[in-house]
Every structure is written in structure tokens, then in C-alpha cells.
Length: 54
Image 1: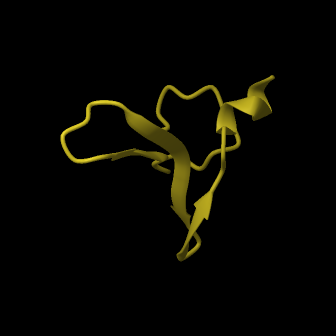
Image 2: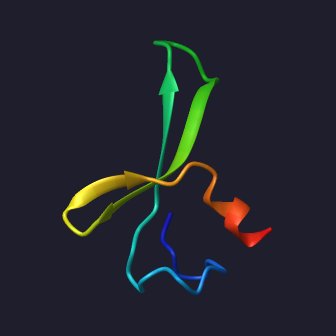
């Protein structure tokens, strides 16, 4: 998920927020996560980052 077009002005331009899924082999449904970013030389997780917009 690229932050361009994201309504969060506090994100540094070019920051990429990653999303991923865990699926059992052969399944199409599983657990989906997002909010992972590489910031200042380390991985950080912002669970449910859209809550900041509420």
C-alpha cells in the first residue's frame, strides 16, 4: 500500500505501508494484516493505522 493518496499528512512522502495475509495451504481465506513500515532503519507496526483519522 503506497501512502500517496493516503489522507494522513504526517506520513513522510514515499513511506510504504505494507499489508500481508496468512493463509493455510490450499485456502483462500485467512488472517489479513496491515500497517507495517520500515522507518529509521527498523520495522514498525501500526495496527489499524486508519484509527488516527477518526
